[in-house]
Length: 309
Ligand SMILES: NC(=O)c1ccc[n+]([C@@H]2O[C@H](COP(=O)([O-])OP(=O)(O)OC[C@H]3O[C@@H](n4cnc5c(N)ncnc54)[C@H](OP(=O)(O)O)[C@@H]3O)[C@@H](O)[C@H]2O)c1
Image (tube, rainbow, N blue to C red; front, side, top):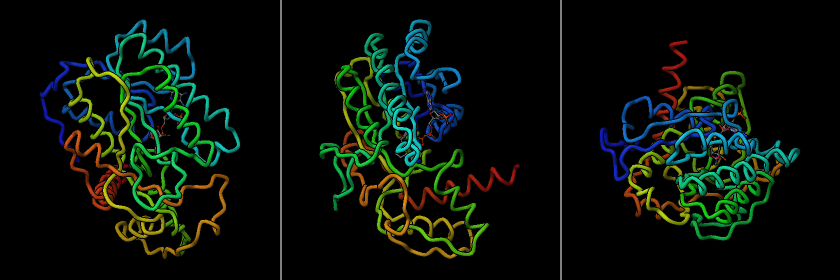
């Protein structure tokens, strides 16, 4: 994982950073890093929907009027990909309209915004890693709502960064790794799709990357909106990901490869969603860990957590 330099206040002095959606996977990892004491260049305000609902325009405007905010890291999102097909208005409310409200406030108050988007903004028909400049063509409601969230930041004239990521997991929250660990204990055999390619990303790695970027960006003078791709390194299919989880966790459960057609879901997932990370690596000199090394670290952390229960 990236090391944030202790006591290095970076180029900004001490920043007040509002982290929305702080109880989710990414928000929780940012909170852990903040507690570790390596982030003395920031004073954090952590809020989730119970304190600050990003869809509530009056509430968010009022929050900005009563709290000084230099940077917003928006981890709040509607992330239920299949459910979004059934309740699109809920997905658009958070992923587009909520982002619009935060954007307005950032522009009014002169705050920098770091927003997280997704590989699902692409249609998955590619065969080489997607670059930031590749055309967007989401195939489902979730992807479209995230794309419109990106668009609205541009329309509002936000100064900030959009980080597109993919296949997030962590030891907290609901995710593929934890589902596999559960199924690995309950079943002798499971079938997992083997024709969708992407890169698993430990939320802890993304959290460290975001804080590293923050430490190395002149947020008070930055102008315009930059898009970067960040996932862990390497690529695999969900089948390979599941097999690695079972093997590393010592589960006896057999993993069988199937095609997407054999696993019906309400949202069609991109077949290929590997993201090209050259831009973020060149701009910030990031060294990104391989997905399977990070998976092992997350499993070690998860085992430790379970052992203390
Ligand atoms: N998960 C993935 O595989 C993945 C892949 C690519 C990109 N991303 C993006 O990465 C970012 C972080 O994802 P994540 O996995 O950490 O998401 P997550 O675990 O679902 O966390 C999202 C958080 O936002 C909160 N939230 C929902 N509606 C809100 C509102 N109106 N106001 C304030 N907070 C609200 C959620 O609360 P509730 O739980 O109470 O709803 C939750 O605590 C998101 O932008 C997501 O789109 C995720």
